[in-house]
Length: 224
Image (cartoon, rainbow, N blue to C red; front, side, top):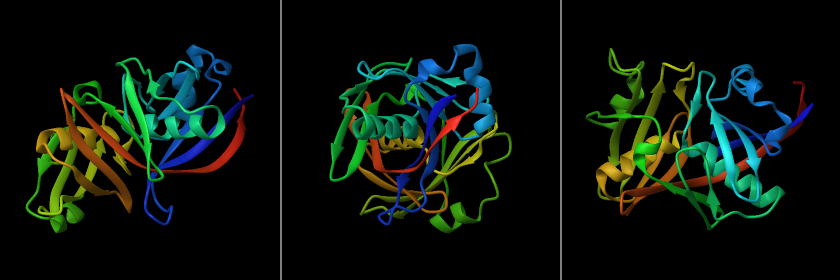
């Protein structure tokens, strides 16, 4: 048995919505050769295995493969370590060192856009067009469609699709938010999925950050 925490990351102000995330705080309980199968069985867009909590060393798996970096897993894991173990200033997924900060009840991580999946950012005419889309444009396997809700205020409507790893439409996508903030070179507030909320901004020197609210839904034993 291994202990599994189930979170929702990028909730709204009422702690609704958000993207489900599975985290094994004692990742060593899950043998490396079993991790991909466990992530596939759980079916979350990502599952995290914490190999060294004090050093912030983690690994991240989608249902289809391992990622070097992803946004909602790092935000959720940073929040959970602060709640259950000790606050961390750095997480260390395979891609590199991810800085962590907490502000106003929200947890933020910063990274380089190129560390995450190679999102195709596709601007649509308006938020209604984003709402109406039945998927990504034909031929796009990894796409973030977006439009301004209010450009002056920096509010964005987005939806993200990851078709090559079994996820489909993602409820809230931190790595895409980092890419979009870097591309737009400004602070943005993103409404994604059914009702998730993400805050992102460009930091300079090739980095951007994303953050939001996190809630713990359940802790359960997982049979290996």
